[in-house]
Length: 316
Image 1 (tube, rainbow, N blue to C red):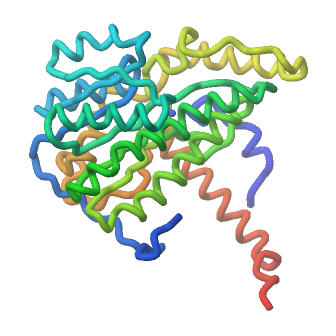
Image 2: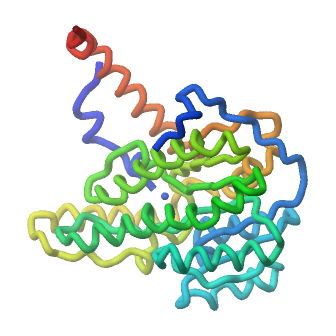
């Protein structure tokens, strides 16, 4: 039976790490990706560090064409990707839709088409009492990512092929103290990505949400996390404790980022470990993510059954 303490006593490995069309119904099938070993033209956002960077290199190693993007302040960090064969464009995901549309036009013009768009920009802010910080988190992870999709989808619909890949997180399933806004973004991302897949699959397109657990990248490095804004004194002790957890976890994450990105490339190309498989709308990767999601689903099923007589008592 479900126990409240199971929620409270999450281990470090369980702390989370990154209008329907009338023609589409909830039973819309998830098509099997079948691209063989053909070359793909991939646009990956935020490739100056982390998963996006490793993903760009993995695609280049497969012979795919990569357009790497980064903000103005980090564009110099993409020179090694350029040297490896990637094209480089400056882009801030929080730019206006008009500017993003212009960038999409430039990107498509480079190779004449676009096969994969990777939405992996994200912000990592802890609990704060300031509304502007909440907006910043959603602006990068949701509003900006949606505008990026809006800018590129017209080209995919026209060519009747293409995939949008979202980099979600174990946080799309679990809550975590002090990370409410990051958790909210990843929950929203899963809902958007899965619904978008239902909306665009009739055109031969896919929207795929990849949800990693903790992988060894610089995402929770102290230099990538904003210092705690002590706007609410009551949270100080909680934040200090969480900061110690992140410090101990940084560099000790269980996941191998290189293995992660190789699986992602297999998924979008329909080869390797993904060959012949039906690709789900959301895919969890990492032992900690598998175990965390399984635990969450198990607990939710137990709650459903425990409250079944009440939940099903409201029909006329």
